Amino acid sequence: MRFLLPTIKGCEEYAAKELRRLGYRHISTLQGKIIVEAPEKYSLMENIIRLNWIPKTIERVALILNEGKIMSLQDLRSLVEEADDFIVELAPKHGSFAVDTIRSGSHSFTSIKASKEIGSDIFKVLERHEKYPKVDLTNPALIFRIWIENDLAFITLDTTGKNALRKRRYLAYRHPAPMRTTLAAILLEMLDYSGEPLLDPFCGGATILIESAHRVRNIPNVAFRDQFAFYNINMGKGLGNVTHEILLELVDAMNDAQVTLRGIEIDPSRARGAMLNTKRAFVSDTITIENEDALAVDFKTPRFIVSNPPFGVRLNNNITETELYHRLARKIKEISDVDILMIGPKKIFKPAFDEFHQKKYITISYGAFYIKLAHYYNP
Ligand SMILES: C[S@@+](CC[C@H](N)C(=O)[O-])C[C@H]1O[C@@H](n2cnc3c(N)ncnc32)[C@H](O)[C@@H]1O
Image 1 (cartoon, rainbow, N blue to C red):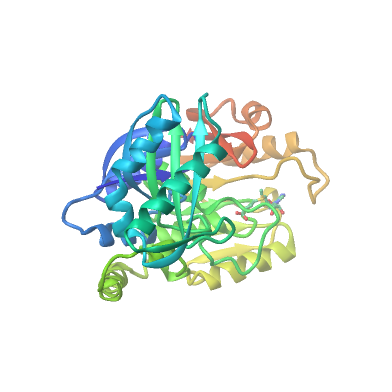
Image 2: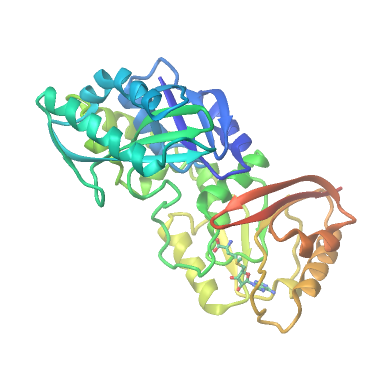
């Protein structure tokens, strides 16, 4: 039983690390996605539910129905045909579906053409088996997604649905430039974060702090969101029992560890928003938000500083970005044994942090642009 799990491009290694930690076998890495083999001790249904509810670093969960090498659209259609039994089994008797093709590399067919032809093939096979499908391209109950990277193709069924897993649903206040929850989780995975004192000096809506608390307290995604496409899959009887069992197990695994998680935010309405978010995310008891200028407060002695400092915006305290990063670096220099993880444009933070021990620089694809993820250490 294999799954294709999209994540943030450039961070695949850390998604694979989390999945291995959760008992999945990492098979391979493609651009912005990893392939894993699920543990046999769980049924198909259990694996689908667990993957949607527990991991923090992945964007969605696609069940692989078939995979192989292709040269032409006909090869692709043959791969789908080989998966016909699986498709018929998983499709409900009534319900809508769509086919979506995501390609990288050059091919003799377009994504639209592939989706259209495969959609028609799937329609026919479902009809032959007395399932009564409806094609719905705007709000389908199920999406068969074809991922193609060069000559490799994966025929998958999306089990997550319209909203990617980064939509955790705990944000009461929407910061204008929030960090993706999945990226925050990736940063914590890089650090093997397990509850050490952590500071975010430019905390915005507090995403990094909330993800830190959720990681330590084992708070799963399902605590805040219960919309997943797998409810539309035909998984036979007993889905309710299985979800109930898994929920009980996840509730048992949660804890109320007290962690020192500190956020600083200069803007009063954002600081208030951050407090609201920590409350909505059930972790306000372990996160403190200070409405201050980070450059003017004592950082104390965090073990980790994790942040995406402001860039490309006017700063509230009338200083330039260059000055802000230099002053930040000088403040951090005073702290010993601290790891620093930052997201932003290299040309601004590299000169300021040049003296630090550099552990890693990664280029990540983030929305429409590329940014740097930098890991420094001050002994
Ligand atoms: C890129 S945003 C951080 C977003 C945050 N990670 C989130 O997920 O919501 C940077 C934040 O730093 C704040 N900021 C700017 N200068 C600051 C300073 N001197 N001290 C504290 N916060 C500051 C901005 O108001 C902004 O909310």
